[in-house]
Length: 343
Image (cartoon, rainbow, N blue to C red; front, side, top):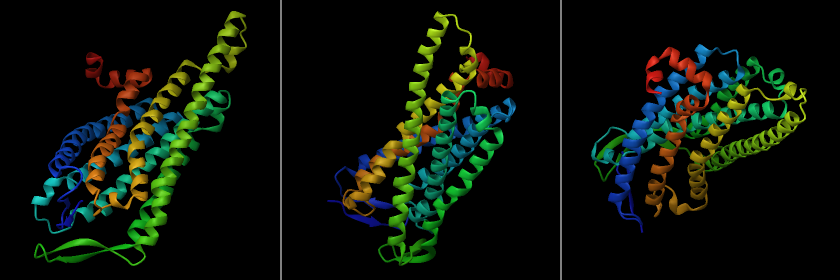
């Protein structure tokens, strides 16, 4: 089985179920090549999203929410890039004055997790808003106003800061001597109550919050699909009988496009984030998959793919908006004519 050695700057798996060379290849290819390139493109795309929504005007609650989502995605992608750099196996050949595995977890990994969860909550709020738009088309503008959207998104950013507190409350920085390397490195040291605090924290942050987000997104998406099909049949019936009353309660074309677009965003979030969430759940029940466990190489291999999916989720929103929102496309084409020539 696996025999792990902490060499101060990266946890190395000497022997495991998977050949170490193969693990290093996928860690390097997925995280240092694919994820970095996609992440940089995603940051640029989300900056364009923010500028585009500002040019459209932030009077619309949907634009406010999508702007907040773009800000959160930028934060997630930025810290993911830093995590990918420090999580690369090549660091084991570099003698750093600090333990990169510890710095990775505390300084970069948890902020990345914070922004991922913020993006999930904002996506869930956007899905809920579009669900109301389908169920209560005449009342949604009165219920979810621009100010309500601003307040809700700010609350999401502030409240989820609690995600960062437990981890940082049970560790402190100190110098650690590693006899095998004959040197001292700066690392994070765990306090006595670390195990107890992290047990409850992981249940809340890594299980409860993600699965609740998935549940809300799935419910809202199912309701939207059912309601759209129902309203479509109802509208056809009204047209056949030449009734004009239906136009007062029918969704506008703009609202329909927004509903479909945000439904796609919700489906992408669930699809791309589920593997990472499942991995964390499995690790919680199988001790061998944890750091320094005999199956840690399997976790590393899986992380390389699930992290890449997280990066893709935070990066593809620009493509979704450009393909599915005529207003977004028109604004971008008038602002950056190069996109008009490409399209």
